[in-house]
Length: 66
Image (cartoon, rainbow, N blue to C red; front, top):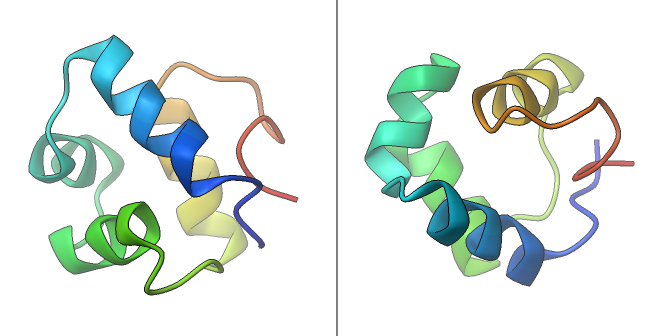
C-alpha cells in the first residue's frame, strides 16, 4: 500500500501524542518500518501493516494509505 502523505502521518503522530516507537508497538510493527514511512525513506508497506497503523491511530481504513 502506498502512503498518501508522509506529512499527514507525522501530523497524526503529533496529534495523538505518540512517538514512532509507541506507534510501532501499538501496531505490532518494527520501529524501523514506522520510521522509514515517517522520514520518507519508504512510501509503501504491506496491506496488513497499513491497516495496523491506521487502527493504532484510530483512523478509518484508507485514510493514510492507498
